[in-house]
Every structure is written in structure tokens, then in C-alpha cells.
Amino acid sequence: MPASLLSIGDFSRATHLSVKTLRYYHREGVLEPVEIDESSGYRRYSVEQIPTAQVIHRFRDLGMPVDDVRRVIAAPDPAVRGALISRHLQRLEEELGRTQAAVASLRDLLDHPATQWPVEHRRVPAMRVAAITEDVETAHVGAWYQGALGELYATLSAQGVAVSGMAGGVYADELFADERGSATVYLPIGGAVAELGRVRQRELPAVELAVVTHDGPDAGVDRAYGALASYVTRHALAVAGPIREFYPVGRQHTLDAAAWRTEIGWPIFETGGEAR
Image (cartoon, rainbow, N blue to C red; front, side):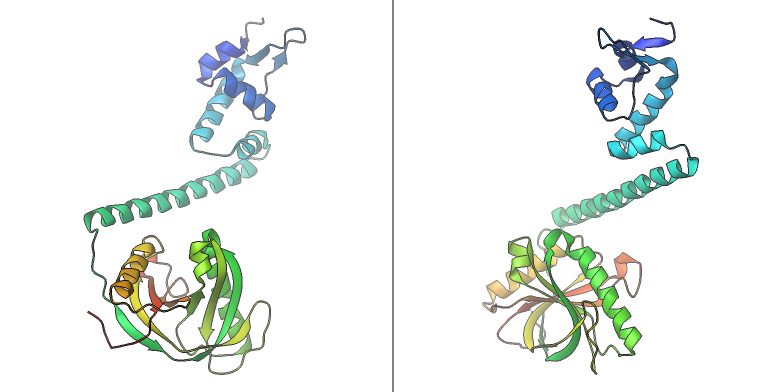
């Protein structure tokens, strides 16, 4: 064996990548040996490949998909490599943000397991709305909601139709129970809207609700739902009907997620002002 070449075992020791992993990287075109013995099939690597293997090791430690690693290693253009790496770092930052939000929510739940939530009884009158309604996967409802609401605002603005109230949503029971169901996002309007794209004009019926408010991003909104369900169950108020949500402060108002506010309404059969 030439002095500049290493067996797969020696290359494994030099790079802290197992033989199994090196064979996998070879199959996937991420790190190919410089020489393969035709008779024995033994793989041999050059010492010049050690830094590349170390870079791959670190990318994989950061959770970069193998396909992206291959593209980074193969990219002849530094700008292309930089864009791929930047995209992955952004993905890591987003995952870190979600993890930090989940940890904070868990700590708050452990420290305050029985937080009291103020509950308001509210009668919502019938209203004319511009709405988008679709069957949505529960896992995607957040992204769907943002896109649908943006489309509603853009459509009304283009037609010069004024928004006459607070943005809201109507969510079928199946969305919670079956991981897929009907979701509606709407904007109240005083006049008529031409139905374009996904936007439709609808008349929402009046409804009586028990309402709690969730402050901040979506993480932890299940606690507000749990408190509301406990309240209407204890007071024997619940009636059949979809959940209503209202969005007095959202992404359209501020990018500061801590300032967002969501009001959650559970259908009930009577109202009596502000509840205990």
C-alpha cells in the first residue's frame, strides 16, 4: 500500500468514523475512497481526505442530512456551499427556538401545575366574513393559518374592502381528535367581497362562548385549552359546536411572538358576564 494511503480501518481510527459509517458514506457518494482493490474489494483512503472526513463528521453531528452533506462537499462554488450551510444553520436555530419554548413551557407547567385562568362568557353576534376553509393536517395548521390569513388580508386590501372586526378561526372537532379536519380562518367585513382564489364570503352564526386568553406564541396553548375544558365541564355548560379562536394580536401586528394574544372560545348554552 502506498505510504499516502490508509486502509479503511486506519482511516476509521484517524477520523473517528466507524468502518460501517465509512462504507455508508461511500454508498451515498459523500466520501468515496481513492482506491478500491479489484480482487479484494478493500477500500483505501488518502491522508488528504482526513480533513474532509472531519468536516463531514461535524456536519453530521449538527444533524445535517446526508444529501445536503454530499452537496456541500461536491459544490465547486463557495457561494453554493455557503448557502447550503446557512440554510442548515437556520434550520438548527429554528429547532433550538422550538426546544427552548418547549422547555420554558414545561418548567412553567411543573412550577404552576394548577394555574387559574380567568374565564369570560361572551356572546358573539352573527357576522359576515371573508373566509378560507380547508381540510388541514393538525401538524400543519399553524403554517396553514398564517398563509390563509395573509391571503385574506391581501385580497381585501386589493378590493378596497374594510376589515370590520377581529381576525378569527373556526376549528372542527376532527382537527383535534383525528389529526385532520376542517379549519376556517376569517376576517369580518362590512360589505361584499368578490370570491377570488380560496377566499369565500360566509355568514357565521351567532354563538355563546366561554373564553380564555393565551398570551405569547403557540407553545403552551394546550394549557389554555385544558383550563377552558375544565371550566365548562365543572359548570356543565358545554354544548356541541366547533371551537372558535380570535386573534387580537398576531404576526400581522408585530413580529414579537411574546406580544401575541389568542382568545379561545368553547361553545356554551348560556352567558352571564365575566365568570369566576
